[in-house]
Amino acid sequence: MKKYYSKKIKLLKLKRSLKLIRKSVRKAFFPVKFDHENVDHLHTFISKNGRDLKYASIDGLLMEFIKIIKKFTEKDIQYFFDTIHLWNSYYLVIIADKLLDTNVRAHVKYDFGILYCKIFCLYEKFDSYYLIDNLEIAVNMYHSKPDVLLLEELTGKIQFLFQNRQITGQQLQHSLLFIEQCKNRSEDENN
Image 1 (cartoon, rainbow, N blue to C red):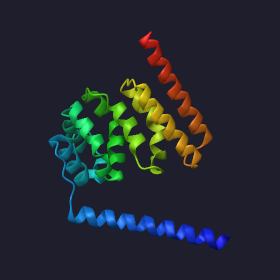
Image 2 (cartoon, rainbow, N blue to C red):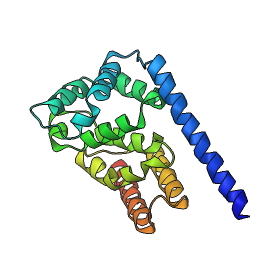
Image 3 (cartoon, helix red, strand yellow):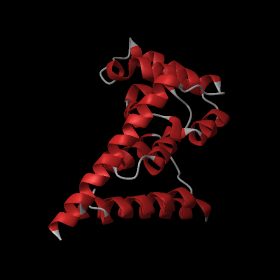
């Protein structure tokens, strides 16, 4: 029995390795280009400055990031989500992280708390567990009002992560309580 699972695990690791190699080759020979200028500009900026942006200050790369996302329209956001599968997951984490910066919040008008929630929901199955801790912060920071559909997606993703032991029971309970509070707030506003 132990040999069977050992072989199964090795096969899964091999599949994951092949998938990463395939992604790397595809990215090297066929770089990603987007049809929307703002989304393409953001992708180019993040791909060139991703590691440096992690520690950027307001007078440098962070201000460039803010200038790019300030121009985003509803169409750009929709296109971003339609093509999210083309993004490197590391870039998505950088974007999500920068959306939580108070300087970014001070300079943008769009509700990027909803964007953070959608990145969390659409992000790779098992790697989104570290985005969960800032979910509530993002929603409160941007005074977001997630709709019922998004709240259901969040609930499903959180339960999926818990079932696959990616988050603790405490994180599950805290997140579900937060989602319930969001539902209650939206119901109170509708009444």
